[in-house]
Image 1 (cartoon, one colour):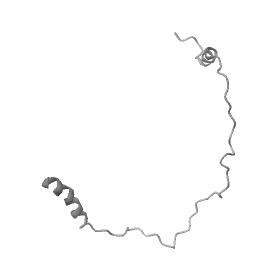
Image 2: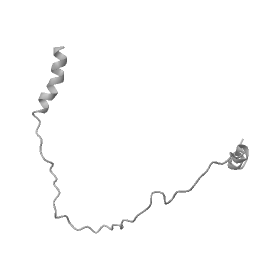
Image 3: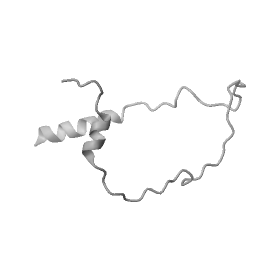
Length: 75
């Protein structure tokens, strides 16, 4: 039991000694001018490309399968 407690507490004690430094890169207000082209933002509705697809009866599968089979009679 003592060993398990020691293994659990040791990382907690060791993490208290870790240094927390601020990041090396700090954004400034003076950014260089960029020549990259930026497209203007435009509105696109969420359901603008919606197409109603209702239920349909199944088609005969044998004719559809034969239509997609490779031509040439591979045996």
